[in-house]
Length: 330
Ligand code: MN
Ligand code: MN
Image 1 (cartoon, rainbow, N blue to C red):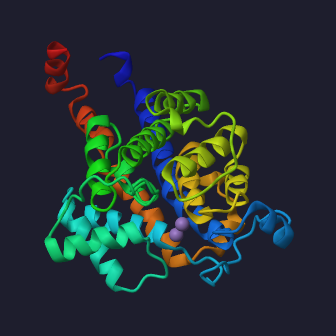
Image 2: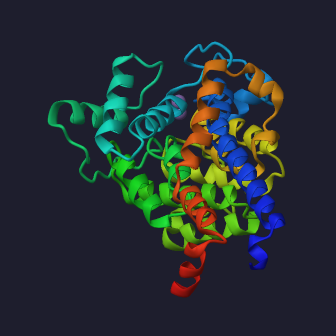
């Protein structure tokens, strides 16, 4: 019996699993919290936000969509479509994702992006599951909804890339959107597995090395729905603040596509700082039905990921004959 089979090792595994589940829930809750917080300042300029709120840091609804406090928008709703498609089918099925998007569009959502609408209509009328490459598809609509895929593929980078691109191309087909989705997925997964901020920064720098337009060091202050400016805003505040709350407050006070920059910042910061770092006054304000569904989905998705199924297999074999065989195979 080796050192890794000692009871103390087993409890470490379980403590790690609890931490991973908590950070996974934090990532999905972060999307919803950032969406609800940022919806208030969507399309406002930083100066308009200052004049109206001083610093906007409470979930109060309103905004151009006249939302009830705690109401979420397309960012969270489309994320939930992806989560439902995976969890209902217990596997990845792109058509099931498209069907959930279609049902959502038919439910007359409070907001829907034009690129998203076009993609879902092309699925409806042409059964098209991959929209052709389009230079106008560099919006943030594929990035904002990808947290379920990051959770579900934890432990398998190749699967992360495949599924995150497949879901993106239902509506958005552009190299900058693809690159942003992959890098964000890698950051979320690394954070969930306990990476420090230097490791996250390295992933962000690798994205910039490949696509220099994402550079975020000297932040220009634009927070539009262009995926480059969206992610620059998120990365700037992620790396210049020290808490979930300050990261999100910084992002949503930049205005622009604030609900979406809020959702994406919430995704990464929620994974990094964990569920417990999300201010309770924000969670109390959030629609309780949404809180329940994203919390449950966050844990359920990551429990079905390769990381967990592989860990489970290893523990089944630990100590027995299978364990020895595995060792021999190296
Ligand atoms: Mn939105
Ligand atoms: Mn938005």
